[in-house]
Image 1 (cartoon, helix red, strand yellow):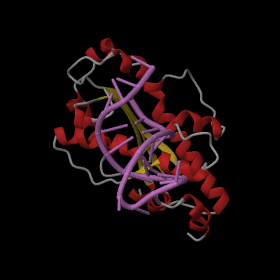
Image 2: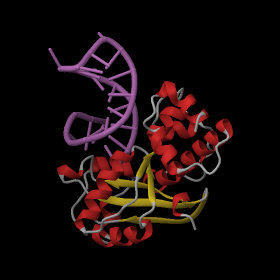
Image 3: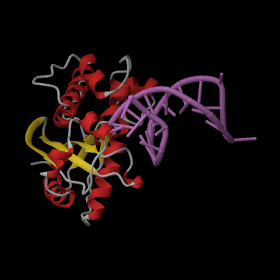
Image 4: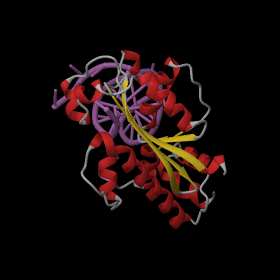
Length: 203
DNA sequence: TGCCAGGCCCTCTTTAGGGCCTT
């Protein structure tokens, strides 16, 4: 198995926007993708040790009752740390998920060496004419079918996975780049939009 | 329902401000 071709796509639901302001993770959903195929997944609610407000209940679909029965953050994050290992990571607006991953893993003293790529930054370059680059909008823009009942807390990581696969397929198809390496996607996320075509054509 | 934070990105820019994304 090649580590370079394996990535973990993840999504956190949290009590708010900033771990520096005391916010905690309340759910983690993740998929392990190896050579473009889903190999494993991880999904768990976690109890942050205090009640969440009604906005977060409505926004995520996660209730205080659900969290009361969930194991504590520390227990879930230990299991997730084993799941993610040192693989590279993908998230939609990765700077957000990275802050929470760093904060939660620091609490249990679990360092990791995987690097992040951001599906939102890549989408701003691959789908430059999308109305906006919210996850739900991109799913519609790319004509990606969404199966099952939409429930944000449980399905965002699956939609991110479908979006990520669609963007890899787009690059593969339009630029004939096979076995797209992780560092291509990291560099693409920093490439000025007007230079994206040249960047990919000259890869 | 979001004022919080932070990185990206555009522009009436770089001696800055504000919108986009994430919960």
